[in-house]
Amino acid sequence: MHLTDHPAHRRLSAALDNLAVTFHGMTAHPDEHNCECHWGSAQELSLLKTPDVELEPDLLRRTWQAIDWTDHASVLRRILPQFAAVLVTGRAEPLFGLEVAGCSFARGRWQQWPDDHAASVHEFLHAWWEHSLTDPDAVVPAHQVFVMCAEASGSVGPWLAEWEKRTGDLSDRRLAEAATEWEYELLGDSLPWHVGWYEHDEEEMRAELVAWLLGHAAARLHESGASADLQHRIRLLGLTDEDRWTDPHWPGHRY
Image (cartoon, rainbow, N blue to C red; front, top):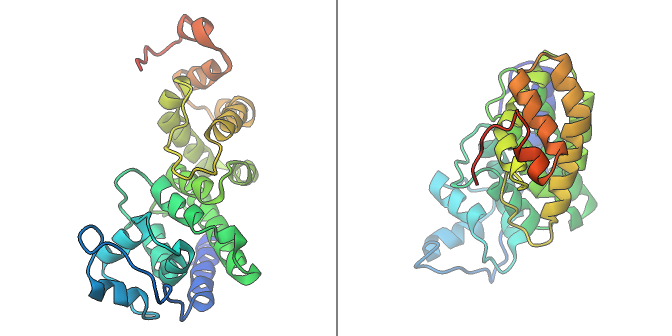
């Protein structure tokens, strides 16, 4: 993949190239199987056991979305270079948001892979996150990349810490866009995305995200001139129950 000459583009391009090298020759387990009625044909399954053959978009989507592989990690390693390229170009098109893609990473338990494999995935996720915050030509909205990375890793902390380091007008706009996208669910005491992997602590992630929005993000939204309405909605996250919904700036959300 050839990306334009922006530092974050170069880092992301290198990360994608590294995935291609690291996972070259990978295949699904020889005994891997899936339901022909619900997933696909035996011929399609054989492609997952053949290294480095590009999959048709629909087959790739069905492969990473499937939750019933016997060895999900091997399947994920087989498709990862192509899957990652599809993600960063906005062509993944999941039905329920990029958290579904993140869940596919989590299901593969990539953090437990051999060091060079795990490091390659780690760098890809961090490179994509930096790219979404700092490159004006990023295809996928930053708040969607954040959700993907949080679900892939099981934590919001590393991605929020990186956001704090990325200052400037563009990163501030990304923050306002994310806060606007998330405030409705958060004011209803829900995480703004579905946590699909059972090992992830949804309440812990929600609490950490809210604390960050009330602290670092609130100050940054004020300094960058975000709308007063948005600033009030973030402020309301610090109130509970009746104090929240009787506040004069309560937006009238119904749940």
